[in-house]
Image (cartoon, chains in turn orange, cyan):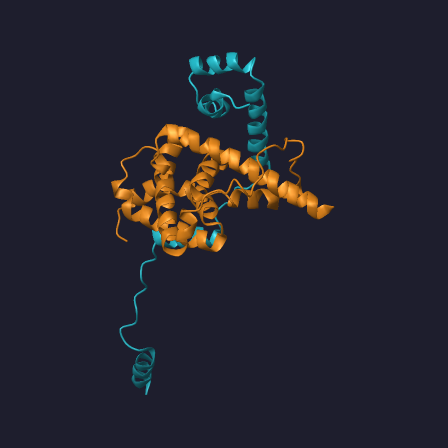
Length: 178
Length: 96
């Protein structure tokens, strides 16, 4: 790739500090490390190629937008069913469990991961961006190309679904333990 | 019982995304709405659980190495103009 040393320096300063964020988003959207590494690499190489078009501003949001688009293209090609997946309210309990009954211990980390992975990608991504990446609604809107109102309602539904999925898995765990 | 405020303001309040005026409006509502108070506790618990269980997955070193190699491509080393064997034979002839 041919670019000036100034471009390279700018890329290193603005974009490379967000490699962890890029991988983390890909990991949660694709639900696997190996696929996430390939897709995050592809997204970062795209970011290198498109970098001259980056006009400045929020480099993390710009990179995560590329990562997200690359993940969705990959999912369309490799797991199209996943994109049309809906959270099945019927098979999950209505969120009636209290925080006390859902208490998370070290051993329950797997349960939380599985519950998060049962959510449709569009709900999983807003939760990851908000809760793990600490993005503001404005940043999430820029990354996902959704209006802020939709970001807020998606977060609301995602949190409710995660709570239900967790309550469901907690009950299943309790049944297994009996 | 579901509260109309739950979806429209609760998330924004919890995430600190409401304007001061809207946040104050929600806080007044919160004083007499058990549903929203309970939802807020759930949101806080869920958010804490996601952060405490350290679900953030940092990039592996192998990915960083690949990106670094792309950003800093090594200049190709000059290949010998002649095969090594031919070069060696020439050197030998000079001394024979």
